[in-house]
Length: 119
Image (cartoon, rainbow, N blue to C red; front, side, top):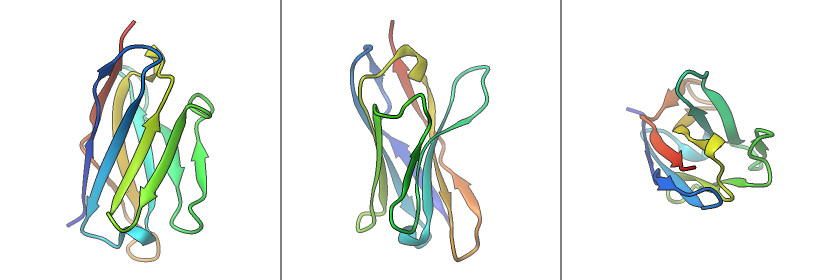
């Protein structure tokens, strides 16, 4: 069974930093494309950052580029999102997503972790 567990969400002041983690199990982590999404109340879920299963290519939403950094540690089956210079607009539930490339090609979601940037 695929399992994705996010952690690291917290309440922080504008300009602060957080590092989110996504612990993965139940699949071949190194073959999966991993992503962070977020969803604020009343808004659609949006892609924040993605790191592929081949060559560790990364993509970022324009709103977080230069502030957030996505990474993965295949030996630990863990993906990270380093968030710096946080803004109130970053407030959302952040979700881990896995696409199981080269196997089932299925997509899976974690339960989310709350990030709140105070004003």
